[in-house]
Amino acid sequence: MDLKQLIQASAQELDQAKVAFGHGTLTAHDEAAWLVLWQLHLPLDLDLTEDLSKLQDQVSLFHSDFNLATLSVEQVRACQELIEKRIQTRKPAAYLTREAWLQGIPFYVDERSIVPRSFIAELIADGAFDSWLSETSHSFLDLCTGNGSLAVLCAMAYPEIEVTGSDISTDALAVAKINVEKHQLSDRIQLIESDGMKGLSQSFDCIICNPPYVCEASMQILPKEYKAEPLLALAGGVDGMDFIRQLFVDLPERMNDKAILVLEIGNEREHFEVAFPELEAIWLDTSSGEDQVVLITKEAFMKTLHKAKCDAL
Ligand SMILES: C[S@@+](CC[C@H](N)C(=O)[O-])C[C@H]1O[C@@H](n2cnc3c(N)ncnc32)[C@H](O)[C@@H]1O
Image (cartoon, rainbow, N blue to C red; front, side, top):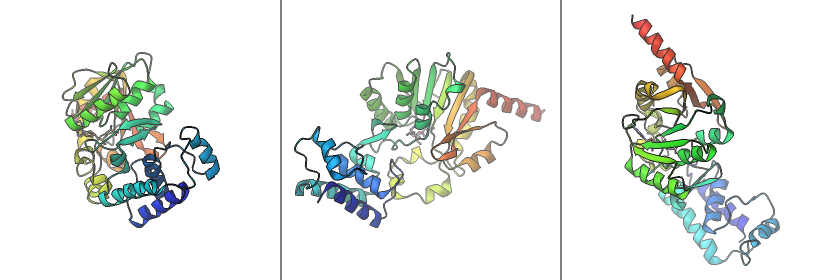
């Protein structure tokens, strides 16, 4: 069996078993390719649209005796076992490989934290909210940091800033610590255990946050792959807005002048707009459309607070 045949056969198995995707890949073929390439210690970014001989040339550069055209029985068996594990456990592939990639950067991950897949990662890479920042924007907060990936990407993208990564989960913070150390950023990223803003004493210029926002109805029908992740990372109450409601009470006074909040809300834009009808929200364009991530300025928060006070008079 050759590499492409093995990936094809593995994809068919994943399809037939009706596993769910969304933790780094969106199709059975991509998921099969990821698991097979990882198991064979091949580069995950091999361009599988190339024919086998071209792939062989690339692989031979660093694995001189690796034959893609005739994989050994042991190689095929090891890949089949991994695919079988994916099907039987219904765990996201990243929990099996202990690795997730965001914007080309590898992160350690295990069941103590959610598999990172935030759209905020692409916004950081594209500089999508740079025009709201200034030379004085130094203190960033990655609120609900999980495995710390967004904090790491911020520190990499903005070499002058200091980043705080906070989370209520000591388990998630232990994973974040691994990633901060893996990327040698311990001198620029501090990790703090905190329930929302409660355990944080500082004020910030830029807050990024991918909070638990999945509404109750969606929680009920989540595929098993998502139930393998910490419940705390996903469930956001009846309308998904529980965490965000409290955040909007606590956050404004902890935002420096001209500070911004970049907040991911997934598929909950409707719930967000019902919950916060007066708030000036700027929807940022992501690869999944314009309703996943919202930017809110300190000014917008202050306007809403001012209006609420006037209305109460
Ligand atoms: C959707 S995950 C995001 C993780 C990471 N930022 C990412 O994008 O992959 C939400 C995170 O919020 C944390 N969390 C839940 N409730 C919290 C709270 N009240 N205060 C702080 N963090 C909380 C969870 O532990 C989880 O790590």
